[in-house]
Image (cartoon, rainbow, N blue to C red):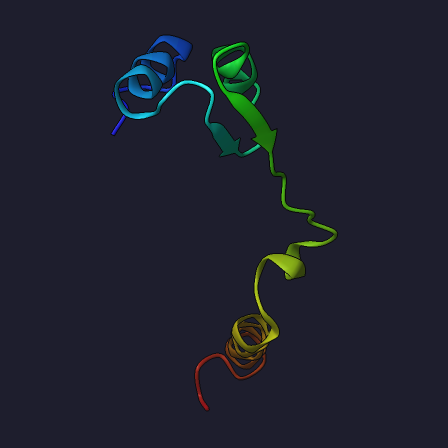
Length: 78
């Protein structure tokens, strides 16, 4: 666990637990870029998000929308 989100904390963690020249896959957060340069092979993965609904599968999002509709329309009387 990192104490904070600083580049120094990340660099110390990597030096302690990850061997140099390995491939490190990270999110698109910018501080990773400078920390990993030169020592590790860095591959960024940024998940494509086309809409907020794509973050949740339909089987989670739709019941939630139904609950909201029932509460707003029937005000909890259902």
